[in-house]
Amino acid sequence: MITRQEAIAELTADGMPLELQTVEVHGNSLRVFKNAPDSLRDVWLLASKQGEAPYSIYEDKVLTYGDAQRQVVSVSAWLTAQGVKKGDRVALGMRNYPEWAIAFWSIQCIGAVMVSLNAWWIADELKYALLDSGATAVIVDGERQERLSDELLAELGIGVALVARGAARPGLTSWEEAAGNTSAVLPDVEILADDFATILYTSGTTGFPKGAAGTHRNYITNVWNNKFSVALAGKMAGLVPNPAAPAKAQTVALSTFPFFHIAGLCGLINNTTNGVCVVTQFKWDAGDALRIVEKYKVNTFGGVPTVVRSFLEHPDFSKFDLSSISAIGQGGAPVPPDSVATIEAEFSGKVSASNGYGLTETTAAVIGNSGAAYFAKKDSVGLPYVGTQIRI
Image 1 (spheres, rainbow, N blue to C red):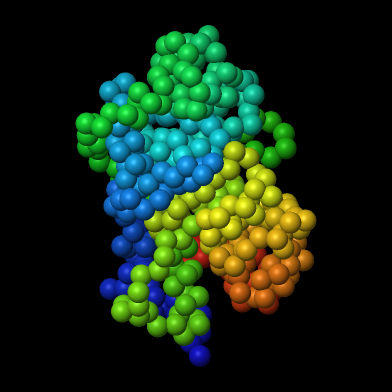
Image 2 (image 1 turned 120 degrees about the horizontal axis):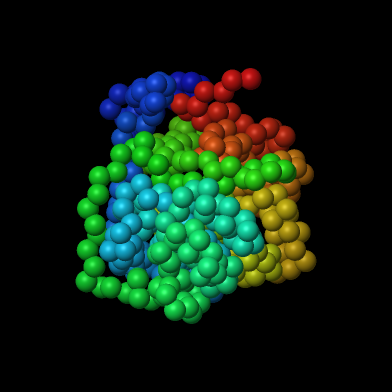
């Protein structure tokens, strides 16, 4: 049987799709995936070729990858026409609507920096992040618009404001106007791997939150770490790729982490990269989640342990067909071993459970545990991802 180190060596060898190389980044030597794209713009443009495959489902309304691409191009062109340029901070605050994803990819496609606004923040908290980040534009939903008065926007020097899922008040632009230009052309911009892509605010229990900056390389490494983990698990299991095998059906994922959170954002980017259909809710509702899983044959979902527990322990759990589920992930808080045991028991070991350790500052998980290894060690967060250096 092949060892873990032997499998890693084979997968990352010269000429392999997951080949590693050493690069210097800000004076530090890092091992990175040689064949990964340079920017999130590149990621989106590749993903958008999925065309008429479903990209998102919200309240039973389907948006295809092609629909999303047309809106991304239009919003990107609109932002550029408003004077937003590479490196400018564009704040994004709304629920997990499809427009959140489209706005995010639009910002990335012009090389601007997405400032993630916690949708639970009140006006003073929003003001702090907007001022601290130096945002010059905002994209928000109707609820967030109500917390950002004209006086506050003027005080902060924010002259570009776009509103989705709500009527834009005078002086602000409606989503329909910005996203509906079918003749728009995607602006041309050069984006490098170590350019900043995001600022996410994170904090402990006291004081103001701190803005953690993430680069395009950070997010793309997260995606390729997940690709590598899948390949490693297959290698360790002795699975041999079969090029002649029929194409698999599109994966459907139920996203429960807020997109403004690093776990939700990385989940969105991973799912988009892999051509997944992403289903979201207005807010977490375990009973509605059961309905969604059955109706759309959801394959993967995850969340903080309390969310997953509320799903597994819902009184109607046994009334729904959940046979489509193949993986359940947990994170954002310590995962009780009994929760992992419940997943193993309820699905007869056929559903892969996963857990990881990471921070906003590390662009989500840098350590992970999943599948049979996780069922064997239910209290372990796992092993570092390839290329990750851990100091204890």
